Length: 269
Image (tube, rainbow, N blue to C red; front, side, top):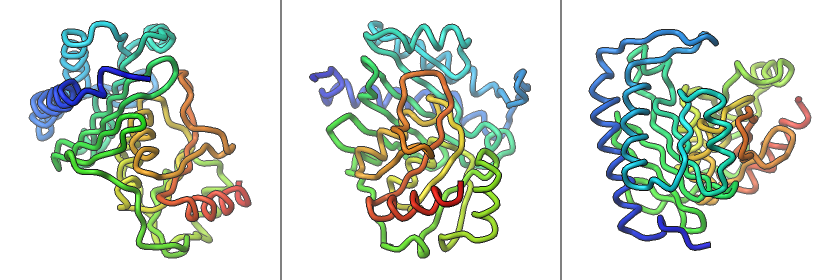
């Protein structure tokens, strides 16, 4: 299916625009963070609101045919936008808000476009490192305009670095990972979107997370997929669902590591 973002001019304009807005609205606020708490106890910073407002305006001015779903939109607005088959932007204005509010420089901006239920493009921008991960469906993944491939220096699970969010895993699985880990070492970086991208870049080789929202994973999922990585849910379903529901995620850089990782997790659910 031809899509306007297959055109280099539109693609470059989108990447440049998101990068500039993030630098102006998020990066400039990093050392002076003002935040409140939402009803669910999670943090909301001034940067979240400013980034979402500015990015929504930029997208509407340039591509008004697509609806908009932001993490800070109401649930009713999110469901309505995602249900529009013409297309819907999905934005997480600051993924890793707890890190951001604590002055821990591991956070990102995640943007995806869903058309008729398929993610056709995604980008994840890390302002602190000025790294822009991006992908278009069937056109590959990139990091700062260079091709990105999910490669691994290891072919055995016990030699790998893993990214694991223990907090959201089933208790038995979390306990098994803590007591009898099948990998060499583990990290938890606090930004789901960067989790996906760092696997796509081979900075870690396997990943598991128990519950993430569509604005967390949409862009990163496409980037990993287009980089050649593998993913599924803990129930061995496709991660991507065009619905506002939380999904688990299992991922790896290569098919062999994915099989080893998935087999171990299934034995320890």
